[in-house]
Length: 364
Figure 1 (cartoon, rainbow, N blue to C red):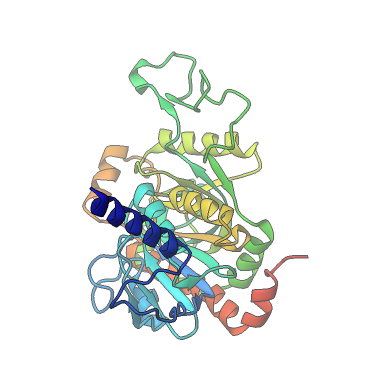
Figure 2: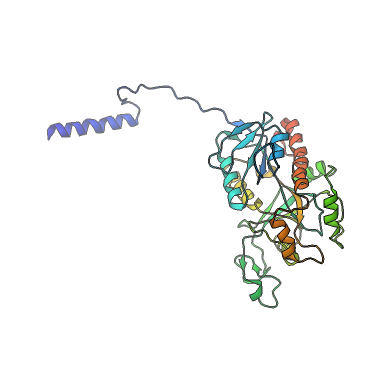
């Protein structure tokens, strides 16, 4: 009994001494701690959402052209994300998030919290394709986003059961009727990007020549009465509507314009629809709160692969049927435009890094 008590007493003393670093177990000599490697300073993070096949060498999605043209040859595994990331020697990192707001938010958070990267001065460029409003853009056009508005956060009543005086069955959260004031803006419903940076990116790229094809000209000619849809592709700025539901048709397009106007107080203009950007921006917002990134250095670029509504004389169902089979009239051209326009900004940041690191372009 006494021997057992003695053993317990010695054990407790040893534990106490170990806590203050005095008691060392035999066979485990003390060693000097190895310093952690210095994080890699990232200058630009390019965020793409989907890829058709491999990263290189086949039909390109949103990721491949960046990998090939920016020579993103260094592959870095990202177990907590959707896909590995790639980097080049210039400090440009690209990530592939996967489709939808949930995957985008998770993958961006995985990159943002990774201790291997110093993202404190990094610029973020979301570069992908989307549907464009024919009232504002043409096929193959590029839109720098002023606002990103969430199209999923809402109540919804089936359109066949809504009151006759309602314009839509979509109702803002915490409200009882469509577009009931005031618009709530603190729950992820809207993200406003740095207007000076957006304007700088637009001014830098507005003259970029974008690909046009006979197929695109034929497709847009069907949109009689839409002056902007009739134009060759161009670079502009406007608002991005983001949600994991791929909506389509004249009435949905009308709703998107009203939904955007509601949340921006009439200052914004819906132009392009996407499926991931509110997820990405929510993750970046939280990362900024944690001091990992700077929200003033975030840009969103969406290029137009298709229109958000059917052409005159066509039904929304028939129009959607073509896209459901992957028949986007400007798919390859919009993928090309996202990289061509976005890379002009990337190259400027890299080539003027000392200046861009210290000061955001367009800042007073």
